[in-house]
Amino acid sequence: MWAIISKLKNKIRNFRFAKSLRFRIFFIVFLVGIVPCYILSEIILGSYEKRAVDHRTSEVQHQCTVLADHLFTSDYLNDVSNEVVTTELEEVSNIYDGRIMVVDAELKVIRDTYSISQGKYMIAEEVVRCFQNKESTSNYDDRNNFIEMTTPIVSSETGDIVGVMLTSVSTESIAATLRLLMIRIQYFMIAIIIIVLLTSFTFSRMLILPFSNLSRAMGEVKEGFDPDRLSLPDYTEMEALSEAFTHMLSEIRHLEDSRQAFVSNVSHELKTPITSIKVLADSLNMQEEVPNETYREFMQDIAAEVDRENKIINDLMTLIKLNKEAPDTLRRENVDIEKLLEDIMKQIHPIADSRGIELILEVVRPVVAPVDKTKLSGAITNIVENAIKYNIEKGWVRVSLNSEPSFFTIVIADSGIGIPEEEQPHIFERFYRVDKSHSTEIDGTGLGLSIARDAILLHDGAIRVESENGEGTTFTIKLPR
Image (cartoon, rainbow, N blue to C red; front, side):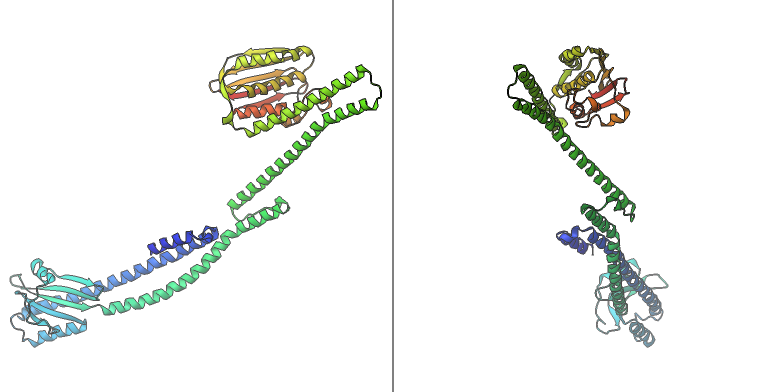
């Protein structure tokens, strides 16, 4: 049975429908219903056969024991002319549809109810063993449907075995009952198979129905229906699955909104310098005689707008490159972070001096860490430049370095105008400007903080901002050592 099931499973795997969850549920329920019934039927048939054979053996053995005693008491082994004993042997043989042979101590058959082996010698293993062990034996031959048993004829005076009764009893009646019982079990199994098939089909359809509903609901969402309709309370797992799908839709829509906003911001930022250049160029073209001073002033403005356009494009390329790179593509090298900060301060010092901003570098614990020097330097430079741009006159910018066993911290604090609390969650978004009223006055593309954050995340680090409107801003950068 199990071999048949194994072969069936191997064949089923080769078909496409075998990958269906509904078919697998159907198949499992079918097996769960049929296999126990098959095993139970085999147990019932085997138990009945064993019980019937044991009962027949016990019953015949009892009759043979009584006959064996009678054979000795009547001295039948020495005188077979006793008609009473002969009649008893014939009756027992007929009752049980069997054959009885009486063997004396010399292994000679002195009586055979079939009159076939009478007068011959019976050198059979069972007879010899019975003489040796002085015990009754029995053997059931289920192929030929008979029970063969030996019964010792024991002398009541000396206790010695003086002969053996070899009895063969037919079990055809037991076999006939087994066949009848098997036919009834087969009918029962057919009914069970039909019931199990219907149950398996219904049960598998019922279990798969929520998945079909989910698939249909997903198709409706794809066609434009409201995702809030995606509610499937059939199972707890289905509720979790539908919630995960709804969350995924929200994330996709958020990403799509972000993409559209990004494209809109890029278009706006790229269009603004071009518009300014066109206005300046048209102004020059409309004037017939342009003084050199005016011409030079207009060309300087056009060059400034070109530089602004170029900076936006470079920042966009930097963002794209950061987003495509994985952490293992970083060109890491052991860098003295204190020396890195000193170089950044020297580079930015002229910008700070032009506004009277004091730059302060504080090193609590120096550190050497494996970082991408170019990317980390660019990130810190962007933050420090913003601290200078959005600072007050004669203000200050303080950069602090501290080291812990597993990470190091860079803190960039300023005395600037601060960031309103409601604006802080958005400052790392691309093209986001906090001070929109001065966006044209303060040079920048709105991409600096986004670039800085991406570079820090690429190092498996973290960046946090703390600020109050009008009281300065503090950026805290944590990077693993």
